[in-house]
Amino acid sequence: MRRVRTQAATVGRVIDPVRCRSGCRDVRRDGRADFADVVLYFNQMAWIAANEPVPAFDYNGNGRIDFADVVWLFNHL
Ligand SMILES: [Ca+2]
Image (tube, rainbow, N blue to C red; front, side, top):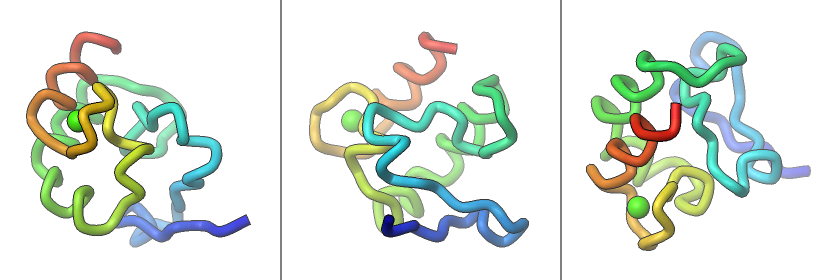
């Protein structure tokens, strides 16, 4: 299984793109999806778009990492 290192990997965590195929709401990988995940997503949108598998974080399915995904994440906590 291919594992993708993320910014969170700086503290020893990795994103598994297979497990997150339907969307990784727990952006901080601390075991729960909460407002801190929304804040991190918003602050790191460009980094996510450049470094993560887009399908794992394209919550609204429009093919892009964008502000609409932040809104979706917030609405689905
Ligand atoms: Ca999107």
